[in-house]
Image (cartoon, rainbow, N blue to C red; front, side, top):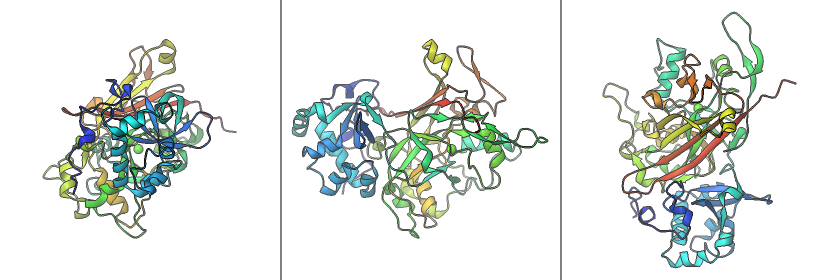
Length: 447
Ligand code: CA
């Protein structure tokens, strides 16, 4: 049996591709990555499944029609000719692994498959800048967790200085059901929401544009396979249900949130738009970058048995680095580069993705192909790892000063937030997630 915990020849840093841009030092998409996504050719209505290589998109529909994917099962070829990743996600990780391995051979400079594929180059590959990159799957359900204890502690301290971490936090993964209808791909507009807020304790609430618009840097967990309703997913098998990871920005209206969140949690403060990156980095591409789960202090609660697994403790974490940068309208006009607001690491998450999946299904809740789980804001212990403005500015008390003189407590119209993620490890090729970005548009006035 293949040991999936060990890197294989698809991770070899010495691999050479006939796609020149796959060797750019700055690319997120070398041959060792090969993330899946959904794209639309200019002038075409129907989306297609694609795979990122350098600055190009590998067109799976074209490859299948030309017989270049005859090396995989017909059901897999059918899935790759769908309009989103749901078909491949329904089949599961083993089939995605077979596709990634085949496409790796097809894009190599030293293989028979590579020589054959290269003759189709002009139609097999399309420049990434010439297509629309879409939400990778049709999302049936979206859940957002709260898995960073550093984020939970800081946010808790702002609202409950005497009691920052609620007593359930170290026992149970906290989450809420989000809204699949307002998930957009990177680059999609972020309209400042209208909403009900109450400032001060005496005045009544009012309805108007959100004044405390924020972002949250998260990882997107894309679900594959399906458990029947009533069937749990044991933690030891939870990663079979994780197709791959992307980036996610959970835009948040803090003033609306503060007024509406008790007692049932966030509602309209979180569901006006959620941005995801278009490329899903598979768990196979991430094999070299797995890290142990966070080790809990001896005196802290240990996970209950249904959330505890030896392998998950040993390698349930992901060594993903995350940056958030801000580009204001003034900076854009002046030609200034984005200013980095934070750098944090997914390995600091208190709960692993496998624990989040096992917990989500522990009551028999069905998780279906294309379902999306957000990790929650991925902050770290240090001040430069505060991955939202609520933490960075301490709810507006400490404004962020930008290098050119502008100041922010929360986001202004015209501000663009750019989230990037990548993995690095000595002896392996760096792989990246691409970008998750969005520009804040002015609110629509109440009509
Ligand atoms: Ca969130």
